[in-house]
Image (tube, rainbow, N blue to C red; front, side):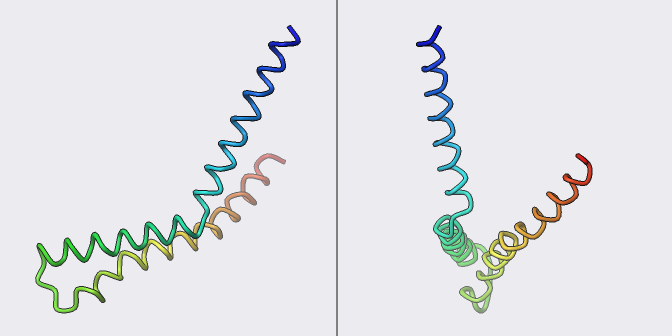
Length: 90
């Protein structure tokens, strides 16, 4: 039984490490910059191929700025949500 318990504890530790890495990636600036850059490139290509836009590079910034603003505002919304949840749990 002792050996099984040690194996279970090791599995839990490994899972916790993976969860911590996933959380770090989800909140990282690197991820946000990569998504914003990729979004910008995709929108430029799409706009060039399908739309008649006078300033493709400027108009392609709109979805990127929307994404960046949403990532910034989510922290505020999460804090408000956590306060609300705490009130419900008390």
